[in-house]
Image (cartoon, rainbow, N blue to C red; front, side):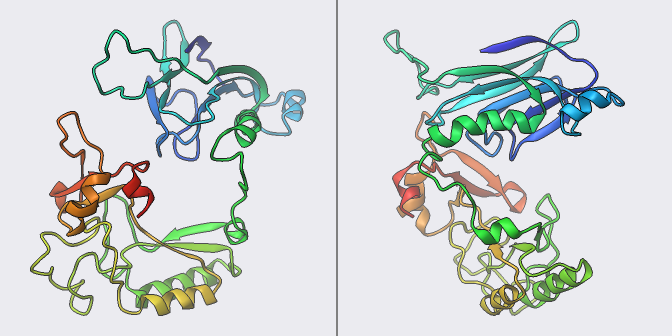
Length: 324
């Protein structure tokens, strides 16, 4: 379904389902497609609305002070969360379109004349008054009682998660750039304590995402960096040896206990989406849970060592992934 002819005019606000949701002032590009379900699309809806001009106090008041106005909501109310795409595209004469498209099961395989696919879920298009929050409430009102992942509840995160106002990571600087000491427990604990003191944070307000908490395939962490790679390892370092996360760095357990005493929850960084093909368990477990192409070759994703490490992309619904 495509909802076309929407005016691309001043005040346009576009909500797209990437990650936790992204709000853009105007169209950020000529068009983009979001693949659901994935980190690139965590919800099955989009919305576009037009904020009221500055100074229009009556309309601002109606919106509770938010930059809100008339809008349109487009969604797939699919309780099973089947594969689909959501997209926007700039049209002609100052317009744009929103669209939702179903992806049939086995879409990578050649279709036969007898193959029939019927969409079993409705597409919902609705006008609303407000902003992205009001659009999200439309989706929420449907998804909580109907979707298989929410209808049995509970949907509220644990109490410690709700009290966190600030997340920090130990030392990841994007593009997989690290300094060699950032994951060291002797470095992490005082840095976290210093941040809490500097910003006068109470226990429970900050949480830590800890990178390089394990040996990453190295022989030890007693030499410079982590020391040499074992003779049996082809690669070692960040984004290698998944899912062999252990052993941990020296002092890691004690450091976690200290951080918890400070009121800081700790989430170690892992990557469960990919599996290093150089590990011992790849042949016995990893290959069975990895996505395959039509020729039964493993779907690959490159990570670390300038793309030299071969990773299998795991399929979360396969038994080996569900039971591991």
